[in-house]
Image (cartoon, rainbow, N blue to C red):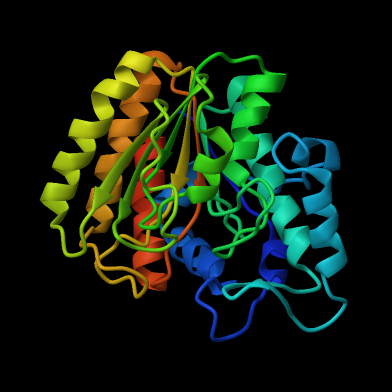
Amino acid sequence: MTTAFFSHDDCAKHNMGREHPESPERLSAIISYLADTELAQRLDWIKPDEITRDQLLSVHPERYLHQLDVMQPTQGRVFTDPDTALMPGSLRAARLAAGANLQAVDMVLSSQVTNAFVCARPPGHHAERAKSMGFCFYNNIALAAMRALNFHRLERIAIVDFDVHQGNGTVDVVQGDERILMCSSFQHPFYPHSHSHSMADNIVNTPIAAGTSAAEYRKRVETDWLHRLQDFRPQLVLVSAGFDGHRLDPMAELNLEADDYRWLTDMLTSVAHDHANDRLVSTLEGGYHLTALAQSVTAHLAGLARVG
């Protein structure tokens, strides 16, 4: 097993302010915690390149990309919605995060690595085709899916989103696309208050009530997802890995622990092993308690690398 770890220092240049939970410290907390583990030596550390304009156009229309370009300031902050701000380095960071996802898909599908984790920011799963929101500008996981489908000519891809907030942007892009099966767990009712009742056949929503135990969460997810994923037989598994369902996270009210993220990872790598020659790409979405985030990501990476 070879697990690639994608990250870039310039992702820290997107800084929406000291009070903002989606901060550069999220990445530094993960990397510094990981550096003290033996796991760090087993990863293939890769610095990604930016996504190209043409690649962005596989998901986002030109008018939206142009709007973001025009809005990005040369100094200070410009808010694109009440939660999401552009800084001078924001779109560079966003292009690197998106580019890392495409590069990870390319490397996994060309058998250069077995699987990959993209430790980059800003996150992406709230970005709709032509709308930024929820700390997101470009939909990284949807862009990765289009790369695998349109460039690599895969026929079936699974997207699994276990962020505590539903990936409304990903649903907006992929609903109705029979080449994609999307399974999503999220606290409900909760932000973003949209797309949680999608009736598209390729969307499997698993709403979770606030305060639900980790044991009940595991039972619900396994019941809703596992047979659908096995029946779908994905040729690639893509993961929107949000760790804000942790019991310590200040942004939500679920009760997961790092061990639960290892359990999720083991389930998904099993599906990838059965149907996709172990091919899996995971990308960081949420997670805002820095210690819990670092521990949970490390548990996720240990599962990808099959350590412990």
